[in-house]
Image (cartoon, rainbow, N blue to C red; front, side):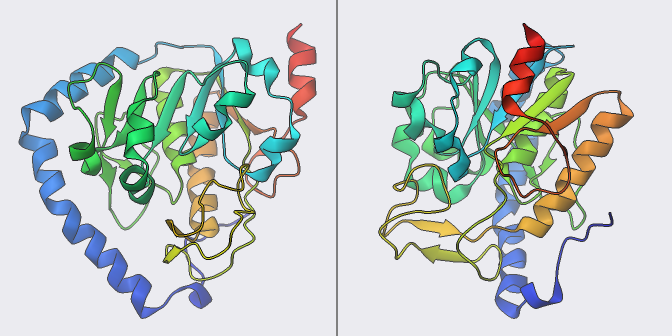
Length: 274
């Protein structure tokens, strides 16, 4: 299966200028990443996670509607990564994720107060550091790379490709931490909203039908249309990197549409582990 980053039908002048603008805006953050003492300290702290979970398995929990149909209680004793607004599910879970990851600038900007309160280690976008306490023991920063061609990064101490999705960042972190197996859930890879990828919109509908909670992106909140093709390309890089190192990524999403990873049954995973 050959994957590409773009379709000609999904590319327009606005998307082109947006890509240039993002790179220009990122320049001062890149400079600080290389000269700011806080950045050096952050990289030293990130090193503590290197191969910390060597040989173990972890679950990366996406935010698709399928989560609302699943019994997630078996994850209570597992190592888990929660993404973006996963905390809206906390009151229904017997656990909270081991780690939290968010790189989306709109999510970080609009929901910083919620995110600051999360008690687990948090991996956030370096360019939004002004919204958070850089000296907080549970707050870590990841610098995004804006190179034209994505690559799979083996260390968050260097800039990582975003791959069009926070899930790709979480997979790269899991690799750095040494996990032997990554199991994806909630990766529905299917959105009810259609349009040019990466376009920022203000939510007009009362209910969010593309995430596990109808108030995930409520009316009036800014969000970006997904770039599914870009994320598939990034996922293919992740799969190759894991397989090259005799590790694996599998997809246990109920009804998931992502074509990149081998599918497994969520319940069977725990049956085999007994």
